[in-house]
Amino acid sequence: MNQSIKNDAGESIDYSFASGDAALKKPGWLVVLGHGVTGNKDRPVVADTAAALNAAGFDTLRFSFAGNGDSAGDFRDATISKEVNDLRAVLDAVAGAVSNICYIGHSMGAAVGVLTAAKDQRIKALVSLAGMIDTKTFANTEFGSETPDAGVMWEEESCPLSSAFMRDLCETIETVAPHVSAVQSPWLLLHGSADDVVLPRDTEQVQSIKGDAVKAIFIEGADHSFNEPAHKAAMTEAVVSWLGQLA
Image 1 (spheres, rainbow, N blue to C red):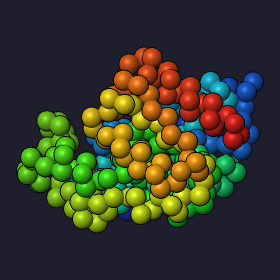
Image 2 (image 1 turned 60 degrees about the horizontal axis):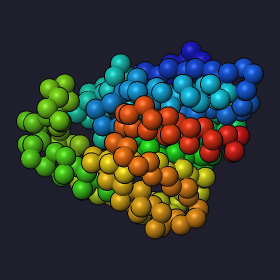
Image 3 (image 1 turned 90 degrees about the vertical axis):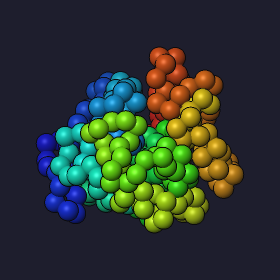
């Protein structure tokens, strides 16, 4: 795949496409992967998951939301609401070529997935990795001590904290929980028990709403990005196994 992808603001979306192992090819399937706050398509939690899926025969497309990584746009505008439009632009670009799209989102990228899958039936399977549900609590807990338009995220000078970001998470959205029931596609949620960025209770909230309609896996001791090799392996193996049963 070598076509350009632009969101509705005309900003180019940087992406990497990789084909699945030819011997294990899953015809008609494409897995799209989106990252979390301050991330990009090359963060290990995204890239390693894509690599595991490629080895299992799945084609993957991982992308950076506008304003992140090598995508065009201003980081200060990278709100959940705007990133929903970025994901839709990606879906517009690929939907005609495949019959089944799985979206995998990490952290805030998972909240983007919930809001999109609740309305867009092109997403045939959904995976949330340390998925954010309570956006207001996240924003206030992680960035409440910073001054919007003056402070930065997690002491990263390249990631300014904008008032647009805080308004979107704390006022426009607050929580994506009201949209959970509208997600009709098969849904896998994975969360580390030691995640102190997006707490496991966010995944537990989805469980309480959807019950047995979703599969939730909690990986003991894993952090927000499943950084330890054993935790990363457990996460990727769970994703590959679950999606392999659907393909």
